[in-house]
Amino acid sequence: MTKIAFFNIRPGEKESLQDKMGEIEADFFETPINSKNLPEKKDYEIISILGLSKIDEDVLKALPNLKLITTRSTGFDQIDLEASEKSGVLVSNVPTYGEETVAEYTIALLLALSRKIPQAINKVKQEKTFHSQGLTGFDLIGKTLGVIGTGHIGTHVIKIAKGFGMKIAAFDAYPNQNLAQDLGFEYTSLENLLNNSDVITLHVPLLPSTNHLINLDNINLIKKGTVIVNTSRGEVLQTEALIKALEEGILSGAALDVIENEKALRVSKKQEFFPQLNKLLEMDNVLISPHNAYNTEEAKEKIQQTTIDNIKSFLNGNPINLVKPK
Ligand code: NAD
Image (cartoon, rainbow, N blue to C red; front, side, top):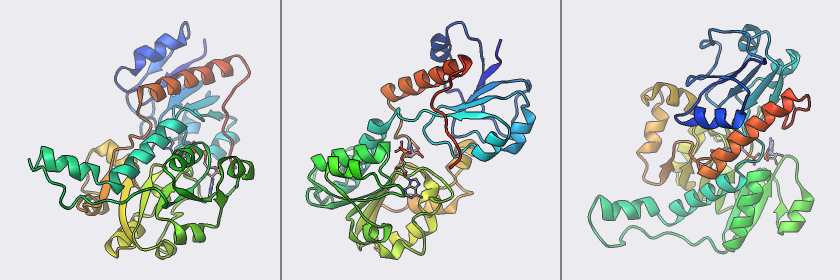
């Protein structure tokens, strides 16, 4: 029987995964897997992981029988794809569970920023006052939304933003002109997008080419007063550049579902090793949520089902949803 292990299992997940697996047996661990945290048994052929795990050459060497890594996420930056390919290990992901889910959350964060929703709720709940002083926001209609990355999530964000009457400026390393024609938007350069957007939203995967895509060198191109939303990966937006832009009023607000080094933060549950985070937490115009954009019942169900489909298709000799190094 093929040896299978699931890592980073969340409370309640084991039962529903086992249910979907039927006869297929597996081991379940709450902990992530990485070079310093290896399982006792080293003969697993299939492992299923989440973002907190890290698969590098050391892990691949430690598990010599490994044939498939399937991540229960869209992002796969926690897996060294080249090293996996060299070791003959296939990698699969959940490519499309959450375009609507993450796009809805992106727009929710944008509305929270533009209409100061958290501050408005706090005023009534915590301050016990019922007036709207200090809560003036801005309309989305007619504003330009700069969408960086027009893949699954970016596309859905564009569709929703169009419903709000926003104009779209898009940037992608691989522009999809058919999509642009169908949805009625135009691609532009990153520089132009930063220059002309009232709102910027990030939807690229974390790759060497997108690490610090927004950085100290280009943050000054952003139009004064723009707000930024990041539901992609923290490392896409250089924290130092973000803080500088907020301090200098280049950005008038930021909503972040992801932050740089968040993995370390989640493992240690301590914030003191990351003083930049404390700086951001002190700013009233910065909203931070704990990597929560994917988190709906529907998305979780789809993530689990696709993962089981990935495993079953591999066992049947016809693996699906494979991710290759670019
Ligand atoms: P996708 O692969 O469908 O789209 C990514 C787009 O980015 C593609 O169009 C691609 O051409 C473009 N791209 C790649 N490299 C680029 C570069 N260097 N410059 C400009 N564009 C580039 O991915 P998706 O499903 O839309 O998801 C995007 C990312 O969102 C994921 O990789 C993941 O990191 C993140 N995500 C976050 C959450 C969350 O809970 N916060 C949930 C799901 C996904």
